[in-house]
Amino acid sequence: MMCETVVVGAGVVGLAIARGLALAGKEVLILERENAFGTITSSRNSSVIHAGIYYTKNSLKAKCCVEGKNDLYNYLKTHNVPHEQCGKIIVATSNNELKVLDELMRKAKLNGVHDVVRLTADDVKDIEPNVQSLGGLLSPSTGIVDSHSYMMALLGDLESLGGVICYETSVVGGRQTNSNTFELDVVDDVSNPSRTTQISARHVINAAGLFAPELTTKMLLKSSDDGGYQLDTEYGQYYAKGNYFSLVGPSPFKHLIYPVPVAGGLGVHATLDLGGQVRFGPDVEWVDDCHDYTVDVKRADSFYEEIRKYYPDLPDNSLTADYSGIRPKLYPEGAPAADFVLWNGKKWGAPSLIACLGIESPGLTSSLAIADRVVKMVGQL
Image (cartoon, rainbow, N blue to C red; front, top):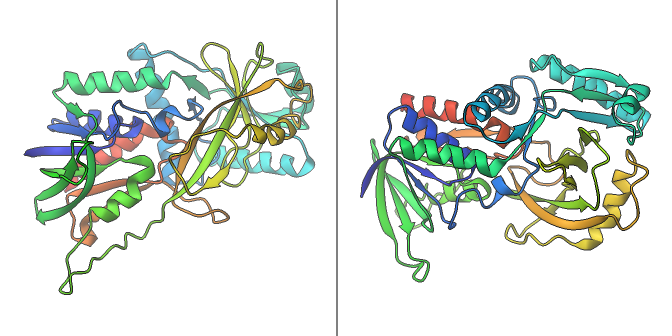
């Protein structure tokens, strides 16, 4: 079977890329190993539209977040996708954290986010009476979105342009067969995983999320004279689990409430869904098993401790275990945070292969901007 363009993975980024390629006139096939789209990372996050405050100037995260936020709000409006620009407050609860707010304010300005407002403790209390702090930052362009409806809209656009998605179809390897063709090894029968079929494409986009680095390695296997293989792709694959707990009862907040960021994440923050339900999380739990989404109820103790730093009136026994998600990391615990990577396999002898690596937060916000970049990369191949 031959197809012009194959996208591996039907998370929010894969769907956005597939739609962008179809808009550019490409024949597009999505291969998704699960039985539905967006069932892993894309459905297990806070569904927040980020402003672009946290990221290093000129990084892909900074550029794609700021561009993607504007594109996303426009898209949600024109496609009638439920969302709300509710804003968020980042709060400091110690003098050291006030210095972090200064740094975040600086980063926001460098990234072109000019609507962030510095708040005193009294300002925070006026806006959110239940929040205790020494000061904060108000980000009015932060929002929330029904991520499932957003992905449905992306898929609808793709299919209206002739794109096709195949579920329960797992890509297990591949190779560049000539300068213009990449051949994928595909399992389309879960009862017989050892039987593979081949699909050839002019362009292959690896948007496999948690499994993207491993799959990139498998798609670069090259036989050597002694029968061995070259496996080095330069990038690691690590997992940071984030657990969420729901608050019993009505919301005490009108905005999203965030502490200052921590290593590996943005701290145990309070997010709202479109129905007004409050969830706290995610925390950061480095794990080896990326398939275990069980929320350990014992982690609630640390949640109460962290939340009460900014919401001291949190009642006892008011948190219930909700869900968890796993962030795809390119770096191990304790290492500096990595940027998004849009990787081209040309130097590895695979010019038809592009991989999206380390697409964690703000991946949802950045999805349309990432798609724009991948479409340009494909056009240059």
